[in-house]
Length: 114
Length: 109
Image (tube, rainbow over all chains, first blue to last red; front, side, top):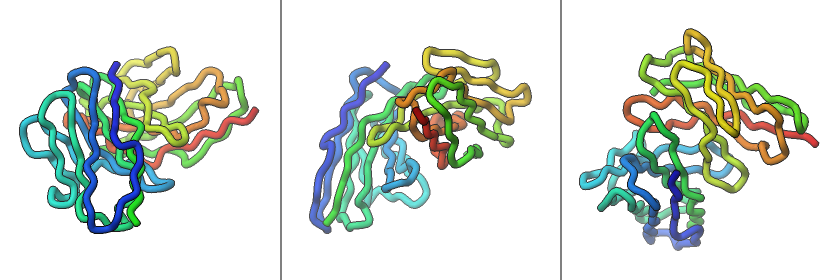
């Protein structure tokens, strides 16, 4: 199994600023993903974090707004840029080694933009 | 992305079995059927997954129809801790987990 640590667990930010969320996995994984979950809603996939190359974004999400890094097999960051109140949400990191095995999730980062 | 259909909500009494259905009529031969659940204020957690055969683990059982167009997650004895949103997800060759709306399970004492 894998344990995922996300930092920060929560933050309150001013509109127009940026926040970087860190995701650390305690073992090497092949796949890392970032999700957003708005209050009372299901999870929406933002992007796949690719090790050593640019992230692959889902429809409706762009690199300028959500730049992602993945420098190695156990670490990734998601930045929420130029934040607005609409970005208030829970952001979750997920990791695993493919569809033949389970995926693991962090506890999420609760972001409030004021 | 292949889609799944689940009831919005279900109810159960404590210590009774719960059968959570999922329809996935457009499943392809290489899609794995994954189930996750999300307890309040937590990230999703893995429950079980399978391809063609029924699967059992310490948390639950997964019954997969012969044509693979539907599956059922079985909780053998529901506890209050099992109250959560349960997501049935088809995981394809991209390995992405695309979440639907899930089934909110309420468990009554």
